[in-house]
Length: 422
Picture 1: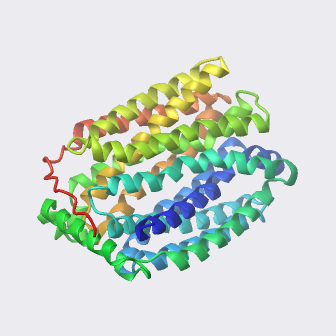
Picture 2: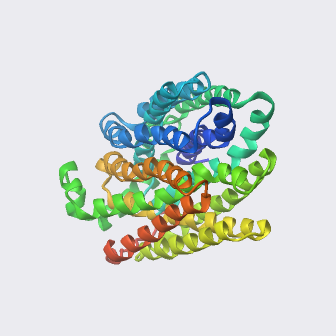
């Protein structure tokens, strides 16, 4: 296996554990509400506390990885958030829970920037969107696996045990990161000479297609670019949809649809296997068929996902609802994967950590807004979950409109022949 794929495999596993850690609380919500007496609004606030820390430390994590390299930042972030995952199972008061979830969010917030820095350091632009979408498959696979992993622990041992076990799993990630991840191919022990030569040849091709002004840009110039702010807002709107759906789906199935814990686990899990497929395909489709019109894939995916999500919340038959939920998950995560092909290709490598961290700050601001907004709407309309989910449907449509109107198509790329390694 090529060294870059080994590094990618470790990053994928760590990202998957990150999603298990952050999604576990969604499965634990019904038990926590009963055990601690929290209302829907209170639970929404607890969920949003995570996103406050997560959003605030996106850009600092990226800037730190630009300065000292992604390896140490990734390893440190893994250790930090694993500790606070375990702490979540120890607290009972609202104030302590808010602090712990905020600090947990800080650790996970530092993580994405250096991951995108790794993608920039290890992969050329011809397959960077594909690499990005494969790693981001964990964004869908994590929610798919979470109910299947958490439900068997939750039923016999309670919600606190879930966080202790996941915290221990984080220790495994720390060890893997320290052993196998390196900042660049040149620092990787055991990498072959032919892989280095292939890497250098692909980087030379990238240089021929590069936006010369952007490649020399400072962080201040990047932040002054309208393009980076358009990406910020469009990702924010889409992630209101993603996180509003993710964080409240188990509670909706339990409270509004009256499902048992076991059925909730299955119903909440199956659509995200379809989402994993959609996410994985997004980068390949973007690189292969939408290279000169990447925004089209984003727009179509967002609108189809929003329509299917609307149907899911408004049909009575559960079989039909399950079909619509799978379709919605497939297209919404295809939209998420394809929208992230835009910044990883636009932002220059020397600013990849900082720039992607800034765009992802918008995404996590959406994650901060979504749980509270949905929880507020549910309480305001007397427990009507459909009213709450109208927020997430409208946000997907808004993101599609922003991309359609403001994102400019890139000039046609010069596709250079791939130079085969000896």
